[in-house]
Image 1 (cartoon, rainbow over the protein chains, first blue to last red):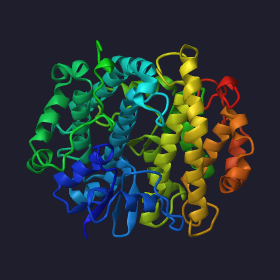
Image 2 (image 1 turned 90 degrees about the vertical axis):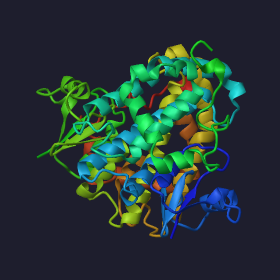
Image 3 (image 1 turned 120 degrees about the vertical axis):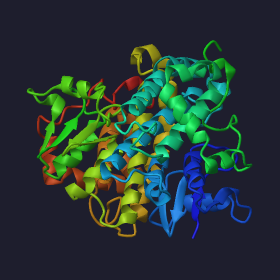
Image 4 (image 1 turned 45 degrees about the vertical axis):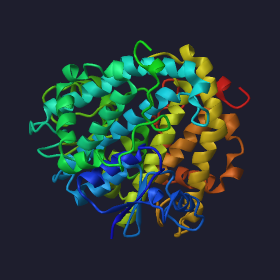
Length: 241
Length: 241
């Protein structure tokens, strides 16, 4: 029975963190909203269902053998062991989930660089505030997060080049995606990041060369970043913009 | 061996969600930063430790038998079963974690009502933007979240009055805390919320009457809300403010 992934069509968005894990593991899954015979309507119907007792607040969520799991970190904690992308030791699983939740916070802050006031309004209606928030993000917040993940890599007692333990976990795939997105959104601010965060750069490189992931990234299933997603390239929000 | 909770002294903050679960369960724990013989310095030393391989990004985190668990939802998922505050069925545990992560998102949005631009700056330096973000929050976001939690309560097949299954879980305690905070921060906007969200009001009432929790709330260990925490009462940010 394939996993069913429910997420908006047309953007990578938060669903992409789940997709990367499924693709890297070669798992069988249905991307419901993008499936011609299914579609976004089915996702919306489930969200507004007034009978069922397990309604998610928002996409992404997955369905597996009747169980619904929502929120990226929750989905990845659920799927990780099944996909061979979680650490084996319990203590490291809690650590991995803590790291994933730090990525969740970082992603929310990246989203708010272009929507600091209201998600119900267009970027163009909050451009001045977006510039102020982006400046704060690029000057203080992004370095704080990236310095942290660099420390996590350097201080991993397994010295594996991965964030947790001796092998690849879903958290590595998610950090790869964050770097992809940041380089797209803020090319000037990210210029030369490899020198400042060598462990992260090395991780990004090694994840990008994983055969199934590389095949996915080169496939039409990998949508391009665009101005409707979380990571958006507005040159005026970048350093010197 | 008591649990060790690491969180800032002087505010309820995110640590309070963990504290409520520990207190409700009557668990033995040390509030490290508030313990005269320990203190905030110990927490900061752990966060900046350059040797250990399990560093949290930020408080709150707990230590239990040498295992560090960080982020509220992760801590509560870890502690829930040990404290008798998690559902028994696996599917409901994933559901509970999804609900807790929705609370995490709501709490982050509440924080950003007074700090929409920069956490490194004072509220007074972003008052105009805070008013705009608060207006959006009170008009669109808060009702969206509360309507969702009301649905979760009404659609719970156990008809227990609790969010998940037939008994109290840590998610109920966290939603109680959110309501406490919202009533403190936005008394005008929350006025009459009991009529609009009867299930939430009933849950808030029943949680407040749990004996150990009520004893905690009446104790000096329960700090008052204040203008340094997540929930802040700036009258000018409230409806009609």
